[in-house]
Image (cartoon, rainbow, N blue to C red; front, side, top):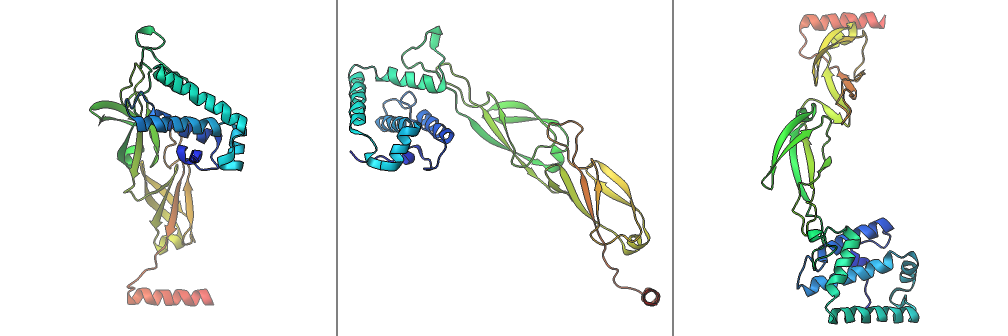
Length: 297
């Protein structure tokens, strides 16, 4: 018999954890289960391979031997036991009970909801419907406040409350808005990804906002008041005399709202950029010359 790479069968790395093995197995079992692929011999074979791979890799002792010895990992007595299991499975197939074995397996993995209250009704094993994925494109201004939207997904209208502070790439699960289940199983879920675009003057980093403000040379030297925009309106700031280029100012609580934490906000950081005056008049140039003389004396 040709050597079967159980890691390739489950499409996992050899360093996979127990949780990753279980997750991969559930995925393969759900995909190739005979109840989902009636009269498909290829799917049935892959289902059996996945079951065999999981049986070995989920057992630490068997996995250790498999990793160490590869093709010859099984001892003779183990091979005999395995042959008995194969003979038992073959006998079940001849007796027409293989479908029941599959249903028992599927029930143990994913749960069972029966028809008419009975524990099992032929291929009446219940399983959850397919999960759906969708994207919602928003502007940064849209997620500054909590608001509602009506989405149409797979001909279903969904009234959705979008909390303030949603981040770009964030995914939320909406239970029960996926595909229909079978055998009385529940509907799948909808996984909604938010794609938040930023066309504002502000840079967002989690809950903090950043911006750069031009400060004229004279206000930087002498001090004064300026007005700067924030997300919820303009604010007046007092500039200290002698403010240097690239000076940073923090406005506490003027940043972006914290996701699902009402009335909590990040901070707003302003960097002053002081451009030098150009196209000076003759008088302005003379005044700078006189100022330079004063500074050097």
